[in-house]
Length: 315
Image (cartoon, rainbow, N blue to C red):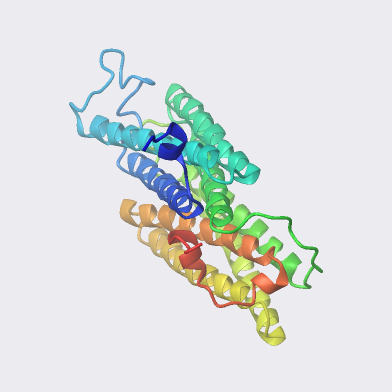
């Protein structure tokens, strides 16, 4: 029997869905490893790009250099995961334009991250560059969540739907979460964990920045409570309510971590957990918006949103 290249590279929807989940997990890992670089003061462990320094491409002679090298290794794994997602979308049978565009967005984002990463090193970890690096990572994670969601569902034209009265609240919640993440990066830029002891910091009082960040978080949580009450009274949109419950649980945990780290002099471990939690909360936010935008018949089931993000569906 003759086997063609097409046979070897053919992707089924179920297999491709798993590929997109791997890409998403790797993007989350790189966010956490990048935070570890900053929190251990290893941001300039390698002071050149793409080489570690002007003498060696790889240098693990110091702890800081080794940590930065591990982070760069994860960057390579992320690149491999993204390439797999693009090739899988191209080889998918039947081929879908939406998945091609979404996977292409991951490629563009990873390339932009590589360029921005070099800039971060060149400007000696200036807080604005570091903020941009994290926010771009969140854009990539959001793109990957959409890709996982679309890859796990059948393609086809979206049926016409009447906009539910709570839809604007979902989008307001998404906007509030975005603002909270941005203000969180401002707190980081004013805080003590710069990635190196000689790095410039934002000329902002960290207490004032933390209060603004806390206010945005509390207002967004209040919006979530209003949305939850409205959905419960209407007794509809079961999947939206489940996604919202996940969001509220993560938001409350994040708030607790935020206050704990602030009142315990910002220990690195809690800050790292807070970054990880922010990434999970952002994923939950994007997932909530996606579920809310589905046709009415598709949001009345009881499927767990967590399963939709981290487990392959049997389709």
